[in-house]
Image (cartoon, rainbow, N blue to C red; front, side):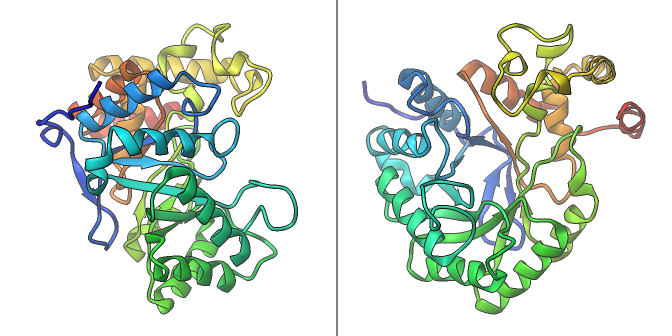
Length: 328
């Protein structure tokens, strides 16, 4: 069946300028970290992508190692791009990253020029496109000189393989130095992707201020703390949840009685705002002036629809913020 996007797709989405650049991003962007690998159901992820674009989500965020297996999210996205989104490529912002382990040997990880250039070439091949809109260095490399990693990002833009560059998981001091180098090279960093949520507030210790000062955009990942900031854990740990699995990023021991109390107290505030806990958690991240967009994952179109309802209520009263702060 041919996919014909909704003609009203741009009417209900809010678009925010990314730092000091000419690029605008939707307030909610779709991350393909989970649910788009070879282990997942192709019709389901096709439906999610269609629903996202129909809702005004123009930004799809990938990385070389997303799957599983690593690389499969890019391959699967590329197939749908080639068929369903072929005539809409210029309406999309596609990002990918390199910085974590992708292949064996000394050149398949971290931040060398050798790795970053090779990895993006592989990513472009998997997605079947000549360039990405944003290419990120996924994490700082303690051994490679920062100038080499930043020169690689600059080279990639000059080669026409990326339009913009970004950083992810950089601490404030490292980020500041990287921004300086990139600016001097003439390829400014336009965006930073940190882990940020009500339960992970490290970016408030200098990073958000730095991004505001440097006029660099911010797109937090894991804004729902791997699902803890949803109604999933209000009564404990369901057998089907991410925390119940032996593998994965969210482990059962993270959901302590204290954490469950916080989740339930936050849920009460969300109810008073006529929001779900997840919607309030996303709005809480988006309230930060430095935040351009927030990255959400989705295992179904219904889950994404729930996240999009966040945009109906983005403001907080001072009393609400004080209550939330007291709980956290």
